[in-house]
Length: 194
Image (cartoon, rainbow, N blue to C red; front, side, top):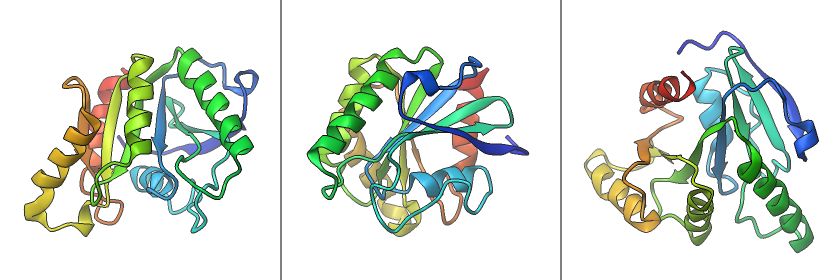
């Protein structure tokens, strides 16, 4: 897909603020600093539509990015970041639960993990949370350029095994540096939003 138009429409904290145009949505979940913003920016060929930060835990709202007036990427707050207060984490938890459990036009959640490392307990918890709500999951294994090419299969298998991935879910290795995996992601999204 060629992206001609991409804009952030709203940063929402509750249902009342979600866009109500019924366009399909693709949520992006992952731990803080896993590269969600870089993933969005690489997909849409923009340097900084989604702001990247060296400080983890920066996204504290549901950010709705409208792409080509066709669908939304919904960037949800990163998890697993220790410097956020317990109260703040509970608030995020409620906000995310409300979104994932009630949003009818949510087509798939892209769970973004770092291919270099075994998925964390938080990644496993997030995957199980999404499966609990019977939501389809696309696992994006980022930072592909950081591992030797001949180790790709081993690393992917470790992600699949650790998450105990449902055979119906898809995993795509991806690099924000080299754009490897970008076409596969767009092909997947095209199928989803039709």
